Figure 1 (cartoon, one colour):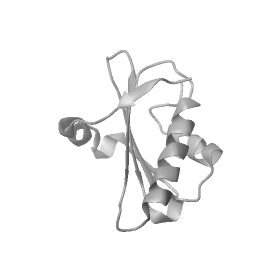
Figure 2: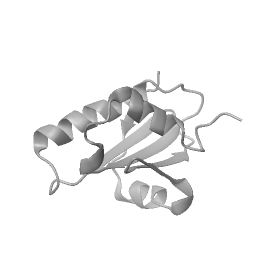
Figure 3: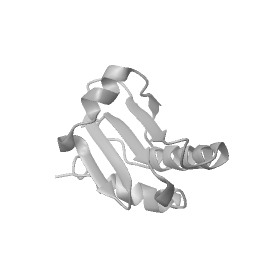
Amino acid sequence: MVKFTALNKKNHFFRLKKEKNCFTEKGLKVYIEENEEKHSKLGISISSKQTTAVERNKFKRRIKEAVRGLEEYKNFDIYIIGSKQNLNLKVFEIQKIISSHPKLIKK
């Protein structure tokens, strides 16, 4: 079970948003980079122009639950950008997308 804190500093988001850290599937963009801290950090973003507050909060809860279910063997900074087309994804689908990121696949 992964324990995480909020990814809330502007420079963290800019550092993560590089093409080498990005993985996109079903419209869900997942940026992951390994960090040297005690906990993983999670940032979630979805446009308020596309959805209602209720839909955004449900999506965020699903993302958090999916990230908690990942195996913890390293600490990562994770930034997930959602869109209207992936609001109805189930937790197991989100977890499958996140865990298929090349940086999370064990070698």
